[in-house]
Image (spheres, helix red, strand yellow):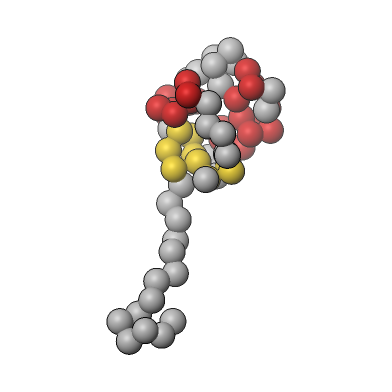
Length: 65
């Protein structure tokens, strides 16, 4: 799932953000307000990240796209 950083993430120290999980690239992308694909979200970061909006392609009422 793709996630974006909340303001609270940006205030975390390096011992609690993605730098502490050996992923400085993800950390830098989150700080730049980019979406990051995360498959195993660390428990301590759940409250500091939000799921990025997904645009779903829906089916129209007539059954055609």
